[in-house]
Length: 86
Image 1 (cartoon, helix red, strand yellow):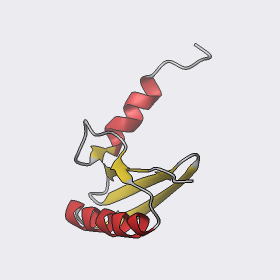
Image 2 (image 1 turned 60 degrees about the vertical axis):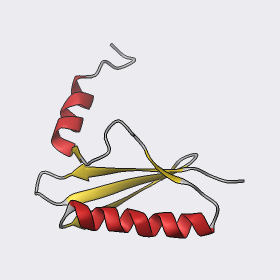
Image 3 (image 1 turned 45 degrees about the vertical axis):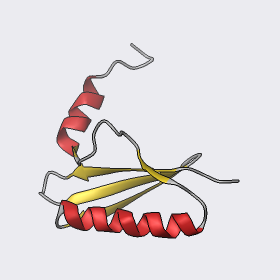
């Protein structure tokens, strides 16, 4: 069974970049410490090559945000979001 692979790049507070990868249904990994967004993008391209050999397509988790997401802003948004307990 082919599993989809989604990724998203994050701009970390320390100026470095990270990539979060989810292999459906529920395996998530984080690769941190990229000095530049280009370095993170090159890593994603390597991931695409590996996963293509396995028949698993790799796509951006949030296509409306093709660059990196600022982690601090994402966390602030999550903290403000209503929960089921509200």
